[in-house]
Image (tube, rainbow, N blue to C red):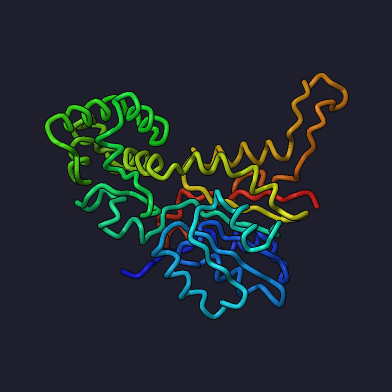
Length: 312
């Protein structure tokens, strides 16, 4: 199966990066290379693009897609949380812009054996980086009931989290939970019939929660944002596309904090804490996909783009 992924908010993101043809840009979630291709097209002499992704198949697909720009593009298999050391190894200290598209690719969702989707009966996996040892199967069978409850409640925002966690623990006492279909049946049995008919597939939130936990998605985002902003050159921009409220909240808070880090009480006439603003939030409200894009690509419906600009 080819690595297919429709780049969400493509024009808005490229416009948001304000690309300097001789600048240095980083795509921290390279995927199939859709956003990167548009960045590379706009780079002239001296311009350079670094593409980072932890998925080996994505790296291969993006390499083919960006072949014509190989003189100005470097592709690295890794996690965007390691951007600083990746750039350091390439002899780079700062960047003019960076993009993060935090969505799971269509390829990952639609490739049965990756175990991301509740639509296929397949072994539980959900690893974005197949080199890591922790899988969804280990989480489902190894976490305690309380841990499972917190993962499903916090990352899936599922109001039946307690019941789902309880049913998972009861089911695995009989036999290990091996497949997505087995997990589907357990989740279905945990949710009252009248509620199963509302709000999409009953497994959607739990699968999202386990995937986030498996790949440490929110931890990585939270721990990386300050450093990524610090890596921007004066006037550089960080564009981040999120797909659910938890990610969006983290990005919104980090951008706000970077723009206004002052911790002095409001009653103080002047700032005495000495914390200086790193820049400004370009997007007061997030940029959302246009109606046309949502019609053509239903997976873009929950996407939000936020942009931060470093002080020039």
